[in-house]
Length: 137
Image (cartoon, rainbow, N blue to C red):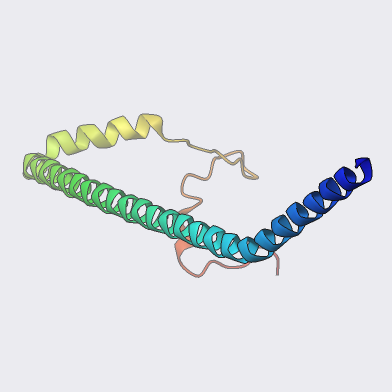
């Protein structure tokens, strides 16, 4: 009796194991297909989200560039108006122009170069714009 009970348990375990293996052989491919489908859907959602983010970033850059361009136009209009005002105020105002020239002369760097006679050369840089003669012949 004891051996009969053992064989029933043993064959029951074998039958259960065979049923589980058969279910696994049948279910694994189905599970893999289902898992691939879920992975594909997740990847599609991720791609859609990344596309929306890229579109929003492009829109933000476009709006930023538009605002910067408008600011540049406003700044240029201000500079043009200031130049016009300055130009109009300097017309026929030679005394003020002379005053400005004298003010800038105070800020200028003057370099004196002694010569053989001990006298400075006052206009040393004047001829450099034209064909200057070479220093060593």
